[in-house]
Each structure stands twice: as structure tokens, then as C-alpha cells.
Length: 228
Ligand code: ADP
Ligand code: ADP
Image (cartoon, rainbow, N blue to C red; front, side, top):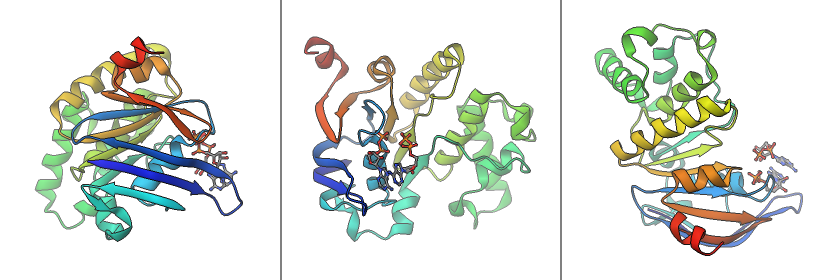
């Protein structure tokens, strides 16, 4: 569970990115943050795993004030997929998925099994893809490798910034549908950011609609469609 309680974030240059935001995300559900550029969505995500800290208010992760949690453990529990994916071009797909600190101490066999399981989950048959290099993959496939890596350590929470953003419309729709299927098979609490209200309505159990630093509506897709 993640809860934002009266959270304000002002950057050192004076910019108030979000002001007095409150909402809570139930365990195992997907919440989509939607709104125009610059309204505070990315800042909200960064407050969860403490890439930024709030100026006022509290962010709770699994019931604990995240300021009181160990940062390294917090980041183990919270996976983050950034927009620019950040795959290493000189490493294979399997090596890219396994480059998370949490797997460092694992036996190679256990790492291989976990990578195969994740590639399977992402619809990339491991026998075809584990030895591929990122530049041999399409944008949609690269995106999936980024998600597989974020899931490698089996985080409780997955944050994703525009996971389907940089894709052509057809690939985007296919990946959205596959992701709906993946969501139903993992018990991970997911928060992701999009510019697209259609994507939010399709993918979210709950939607937070942003407008310059504020959440103006937080509800289910059904209720948002009923009260636009
Ligand atoms: P979004 O994800 O909705 O595009 P952001 O959270 O990235 O919004 O940004 C919200 C506001 O905070 C914007 O005005 C942005 O320019 C500003 N901002 C973001 N990061 C910083 C930073 N590190 N320092 C100062 N201002 C920032
Ligand atoms: P997005 O709109 O997807 O959030 P941006 O291009 O606004 O992406 O921001 C990219 C990065 O630059 C983010 O890490 C954000 O925190 C930082 N950033 C955004 N605005 C500012 C700003 N005014 N000053 C410093 N850093 C900023």
C-alpha cells in the first residue's frame, strides 16, 4: 500500500511541483497518474522511492513513513522504469535483465531461471531472446526488457514513467493489452504516468487526474467516465 498524505514538494529553485496531494493506492492495484506535461506526475513518483523527499506531508510505503525506511531497502521494494529505459548496449538481454544489485549474490542458475521466467512473462521466449543485444530489438521489445529488469527482484511496488510513451500506436496498443494480462498475474502495486487519458482509463484500477501541481480527481475509470 502507498499513501500520500498532504504532500507538497517545492524544489530548491522555488518551483512548487505538487501541493497538498493526498491519495492512497491499495496493494496489488494499478494507479495511473495522468495530466499535461509539468504538472507534477514524475515528482510524485520520485517521492515514493525517495529520489526526492517531500517538503511537507508524508509518503507511506507498506504502512511506514518512507523517510524512516532504509533507502537501499526501499529501492529494493520499489522498482522504477524510467522513460529512457537505459539498457546497456554491450550486454545481452539476459545480462541486462539481471543487472540489478539485488541479484548480485544469487547463484548463476537461479539468476538464469529468474531471467527466463521474466522473459516468458513479457512475451519474449527466452530461447529466442536471452542472447540478443538491445540494438537487435524493436522499441516495444526494449521497453519490455526495461520492465523485466524492474521486476527482477520481485518488488512490492513498480513505478513506470510513460512505459508505452515512445511507441507507434499499434505496438503501444499491443503492449498495453499484454501488460493488462501481466498485471493480472503479478501481485505488484503499480503506479504509472501517462499523458493519455484513454490509456489511463484502459489500464488503471484508479486514476489520479493532475492539473498543475494538484490532483483534481482520484477515482475509478467507471466513476471518472460518469462524472467527467
Ligand atoms: P510531469 O511529470 O507532470 O511532467 P514534473 O514532476 O516533472 O511534471 O515537474 C513538475 C514541475 O516541477 C515542473 O514545473 C518542472 O519544471 C518542475 N521540476 C521538476 N524537477 C525539478 C527540479 N529538479 N528542479 C526544479 N524544478 C523541477
Ligand atoms: P517529464 O515531463 O517527463 O517529467 P522533463 O523533461 O520535464 O520530463 O524532466 C526531465 C528531468 O529533468 C527530470 O528528472 C526532472 O526532475 C528534471 N527537471 C525538470 N524540470 C526541471 C527544472 N526546472 N530544473 C531542474 N530539473 C528539472
